[in-house]
Length: 326
Image 1 (cartoon, helix red, strand yellow):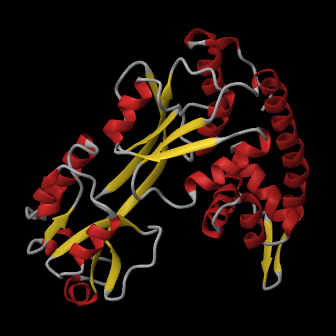
Image 2: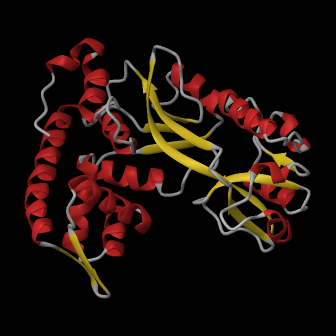
C-alpha cells in the first residue's frame, strides 16, 4: 500500500464518485478504478459501495478513510517541512519525454507534485532514449523517461510504465487476421513492421526484433531504416496502406484515423517498459517527489520515496540513517 493509493481512495470517498476523483487528481478514471480495485484486493475488504449515483465508503472503508487522511496529511507535512529550505533557486525541472508516452502519466504526476511544490516549473522536451541518457549525464536533464533501463552506475532508475503492446492494422486486415482474443503474432508474417530506429532505444529494439523474427515476421518498413524518429503520423500512414503494421499500447493518446483499428496481440508477447531515470548526485527534492509518484509498481525492492530522497540529497551512504514515519 502506497501513499499514492491512499490519496486516490481519500479523493474517491470525499468526492463521492470515481470520475470526480479522477478530475481532482488529474488522472484518468480507469487509473483511479484500478488503484481502488488493487487496494480492495490487497486488504481483502470491500471499501466502496458503488451505485448509479456514485460511490460511498463501506463500514471498513470509513475506517480506512479516517486512517488514510491522517497518513496522507502527515506525509504532506513531512515533505513540505523538508522542502521549505530548498524550494527556491533550483531552476526548472527538466524532463525528457519519449514518443508515445501514455497521456495520463506526466500531467497527473506533475500536478500532484506541484501541489506540494507551488513554485515548481517544468520544462519538457521530446528526445529518443539514447539522447536523453546523454543529456542526463551532461546535466542537461533532471529526469529522463527511457525505454531502455540505464546500466550506468551514476544513474538510478525505477520502472514507471509497463505496457502490453497491441497492433494497429487497417480494418480489413484486422478482420482477416484477428481471432476473438487477439491477433496471433505469426499471422503478421506477410506485413512489414513500421517500427522505430534502433538508435532510439537499442535494447528495446533488439527485443522487439527478436520476438518478431521468432514468429517469422522479418519485414521492416523503409522508414525505420533511416535511423530517425518515426512520428505517429508516419507510423499511421504506413499502417494505412494495408501492407504494414504498427505496434502501440491500448491507451495510445489519439483516436485512430478512419479505417485503422487497434487489436491486442494474442498472449501479450511484447511488453514495453519505460524507466524514470535520474542522476545519483541530484539534490532536488521536487525530483525525488516526482520519481516516487511515477513509480507505479509495488514489488519488494523497488526504490521508495525515502530511498530516492536519501540518494538525491545525502548520497548513497545515507539511506540507513533515514527513518520516515510513513
